[in-house]
Length: 223
Figure 1 (cartoon, helix red, strand yellow):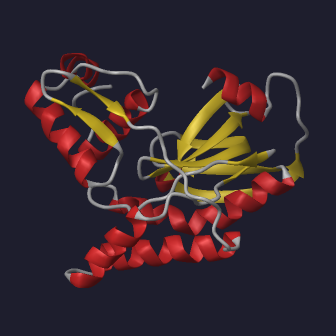
Figure 2 (cartoon, rainbow, N blue to C red):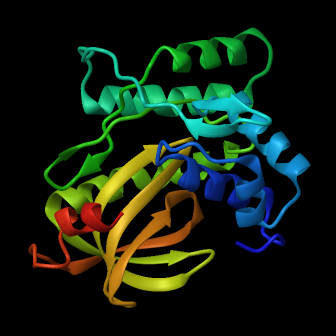
């Protein structure tokens, strides 16, 4: 990852490294990101302040804590979606007691239901700075969920990768960033697309069926 990339991309890259659960030395993270140790220390503090479950300190290394889940709540998926959107709006648009309340409430919730073929995944949170731009992803969550359920092919134009036709497989939320796992028919391989970087989304008329080497199971095996 080039040092010229913006801070949000670098933080996302750090989360991708840390979420394997292993202990990573700050020196190794700095080398991977091509930045200074001081920058890594600042980034780790920023991630922690944003609510990302990071443990560790200078001199020992950093790892992502295991995601904890609460017993199921008596809420529908639509109610969870409404709660998430409400927290995003309050958290990014308010200051003072209301923002603090949104942060406190999000800290008590760790179960949202991102859609995926064959099941659900878990994780919920409040998109504090520097991931406030993830609110841009909210407009795409429902059509992406519907496409996954219906096995509907999509044409996605993203700000970083351009236009491509994909089979949507898994919608996930980890470390304050929504990602869409896909089989990319344009490039001929699996890919992860940051939903906040989607500029245009078109539902294509064709459906897809599971094929060996292109299924959710295969995607998870190579992730």
